[in-house]
Amino acid sequence: MGSSTATQSSSSYDLSFKILLIGDSGVGKSSLLLSFISNAVDDITPTIGVDFKIKTLTVGGKRLKLTIWDTAGQEKFRTLTSSYFRGAQGIILVYDVTRRDTFTNLSDVWAKEVELYCTNEDCVKMLVGNKVDRESERAVSREEGVALAKELGSLFLECSAKTRANVEQCFEELTLKVGAVFSLLTVEFNRDVTFNVRLFIDLLNGQLN
Ligand SMILES: Nc1nc2c(ncn2[C@@H]2O[C@H](COP(=O)(O)OP(=O)(O)OP(=O)(O)O)[C@@H](O)[C@H]2O)c(=O)[nH]1
Ligand SMILES: [Mg+2]
Image 1 (cartoon, helix red, strand yellow):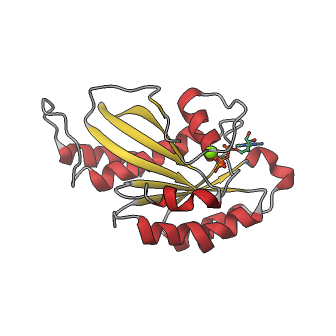
Image 2 (cartoon, rainbow, N blue to C red):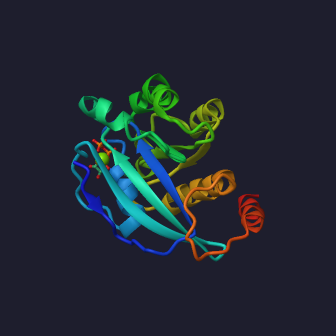
Image 3 (cartoon, rainbow, N blue to C red):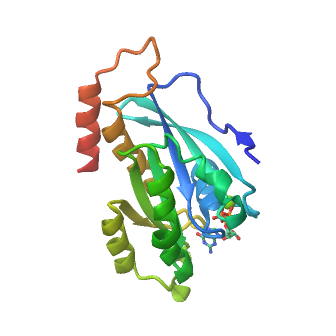
């Protein structure tokens, strides 16, 4: 539990954000993270408790450190994983487009967890429908995903951890929005970095439009 794999850590960054992955067991949270971090999805076993990985992204010449927390979807870990919501600036809610129950559980279970345990009112949410490579087995339409995202006030993307379709976009779009929302309130600045926040916001907004 809680093993830490700093695949691309760096001591020098301008902003640091905490991102959380949640959703039912088997929807592909760990696969998405692995696909994003290491471009490969090996055989993956269910997550025990919580794991995290660190990724550094450069946006507009600024280095952003993302600490991405990968929680276990299994119900027996629910009490433990809920304690990791605290302070998250971004939350990725994942469902499997081939399993309708994982989609309905996002409203019935996971969105409620977010409301209860997420301490950041401005937390940016991203709804992700994973496993679009299995199109013939699709049980949730894209339109339904869009509608739920609207209801939750979240961003939305469909992707595949297996083919890596939209995987980078998923983390990058969320990061851009988190950057735009949170860099004003900020967070962790490197002491030796003089940083024009206004310029950064304009830049992020430009990239989001
Ligand atoms: N076809 C397909 N299979 C996927 C995809 N993403 C994940 N899988 C498979 O789905 C299974 C579950 O993936 P995990 O990443 O372990 O799911 P998880 O959400 O982390 O599950 P927990 O850790 O138990 O919460 C694994 O066998 C993956 O190989 C995908 O995009 N396409
Ligand atoms: Mg997992």
